[in-house]
Image 1 (cartoon, helix red, strand yellow):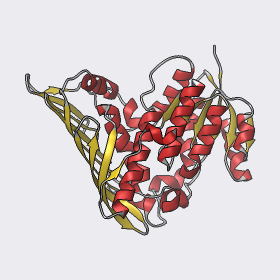
Image 2: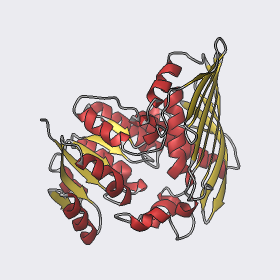
Image 3: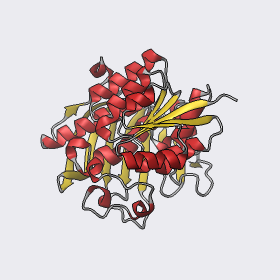
Image 4: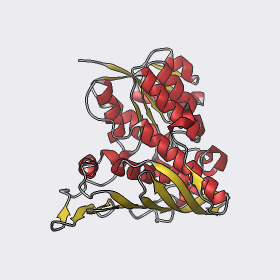
Length: 353
């Protein structure tokens, strides 16, 4: 059996909650190196999961030449850690947001291409059952030429971005997240970086359309955005409506809905209701074949994809290019909001040259 050496850079709350357990359960994976700050915390995660090596210096972990690397450090460190991992020859899964800079995000896309390595972003919705099939059918022209897209995400995150309570489930997590990751606007805090990075990526994945220009407004609390609304021009002429809020109460399920309108009909995906549907001009409405629970959000898909791709299997459904489009859109959205809603161009691949 092929054995892949795995490393984790930034072994914080979500890596310990999701990424590391998923890799540990794969028989093809050996947990080789782990990196995080704090000697006590580092030793705790090393001993608990059985890593062979641990260091606060990510370069020491990469010197061991891992085959796959998960980057789940704070947002502002993603570029350096993902860059160094790619240069070390690893396939890389990077947490979202991919970076806080369009130039850095597109530079990573180019680097992965030159290195001949897979770069994935941790966008879990793409890996849920039937989502890739939905995307493939749209790409094959099921709804005709795209004219309008709408995506709305209302998530359970007010207590992440505002105040000191945090999520109730953090109380029993292996590690509790550092508030600065989510609440410092200079470090990528706020709803746009933390949550629109899911919904925008999903829209780009389903449509295959690149963003060109955006006009946006935001609502802030304690210095970070907690609600966003934007109008986006997509390549090919389609227009999109993008909105989101951190307002869903902790006891309830997040709302994620995408509507895609084309010259031949409409595709809709209501993830919180477990409903996917095509309403086409030339036939009766058709439901996507979903079982109960298929669209319950789990975060294991990108990790499994990283392992599979390193073994020469599977598909990269959350590639770096979509991550870079998402970063560039969020950066332009926030710039537009600072300018009172004036339209701002979204940086494309040339930004990373």
